[in-house]
Image 1 (cartoon, rainbow, N blue to C red):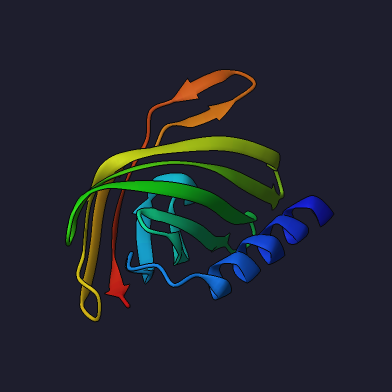
Image 2 (image 1 turned 45 degrees about the horizontal axis):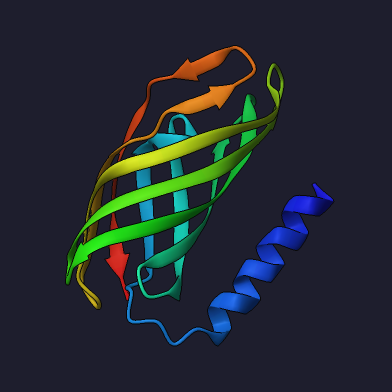
Length: 140
């Protein structure tokens, strides 16, 4: 957990120093790396590069965190999002960390709508699990 905290702090500091034109966002995601849902913030690191921080909570079952990095390919508001991340979970019958990927379409208009539809496969020691997510929120 200490490694995750340090990684989050480093990415946050780097993002604060960035003067990127890529839109950041605050959004909710149904399914995706948060399994059922997650609430997320995405910070621009450089042009076409963002870092994601999120969390999920299912009362009486588990709490989790999502950290990831995304490469955005496209023009203006329409982009292909390619990313990778780490999912950390702690709960009554789940405990540990898994990897995830993101491959999808993203629309983000600075000061307006953020929308993403993506395949988000989850990787663990048993294999790859196909998964997907849909996100909506506010880009800044």
